[in-house]
Length: 173
Image 1: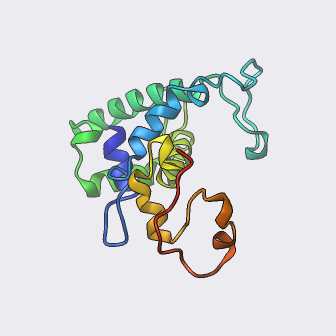
Image 2: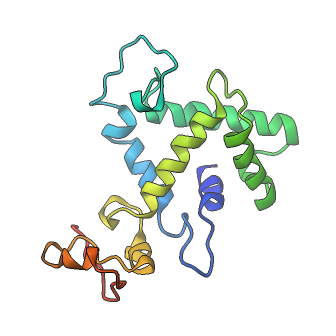
């Protein structure tokens, strides 16, 4: 399911690799199995009230638990409506589902689909552009696509230069 959703958030195209090809799903999996997914360094005791975006995470679920909860509920909703699971939907249907999750929120067993959509979108973007060390941006393909030199500490001037870098980006790994 995650692969099917990431595939539509950043589809493969002429401009560069898609989210799936660049390793976004691997990145998200690694993040959810670590301190981010466990929210191990976050304040996670209540009260949990609807807050403002500036107040940060306001949910009793850790990010990993939110993914498990939301993906299961999403698949149940989609199956009840279409007779298919999320991964069985075609591209047009998945695009419509993602748009609906964001713009016409529905209940995912007590959680708004827009909340999960926001988390999924942010993690997908994070997984598309990180240092390849973290599982996304395989082969530094997205860095090459945008002309980013990577984590080369002696070439900081390349980051502020308006000319795209055309060499091989450097990973911290």
